[in-house]
Image (tube, rainbow over all chains, first blue to last red; front, side):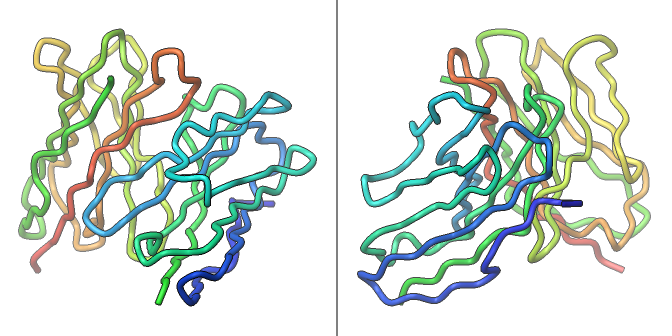
Length: 114
Length: 115
């Protein structure tokens, strides 16, 4: 596609429920990144996929968080048993191989846990 | 560990005035440095980047930034601010040593433009 597409744009969920956030990167981009943006904080790295390599999961805050990337394209970030502190904007970005030419970000999913 | 500091959380300038947003980094090698802008409800858009060479880099929307190794800084500047520049600005550094091509972002500076 022309840009990075994220869905849903907004999600309100009850505490304890599971949520899935979707990211559709730019076609041909081999790298895909998930970041979390909380109010007053910068972007917190969550997970990074590069081609067929094992993902870098070093930023996932707990085992309730997981992500997969199917066929080297679409990625899903799953949060199980959501907590109020999970409320944030979840941003996805993609890039060509190096990533150091700059990322292209999606508009994000605003997650609110009530 | 590498880090990025944006000392100013909020900045207010008058339209037409000059702008400088500060960014300081901590990094053990030659850094790759970036500035991104985020408008409300939007993702981040790349303004400019520095890898090597000329320490003054030009970006989109009339922005420029200067890399100063001696000060570990990469400040963003614009000679004359427009009302449409009101947004949040993020400085970023990469890559993480041994950590792939992930970027580390600062906490952002919220720019308000007074008409």
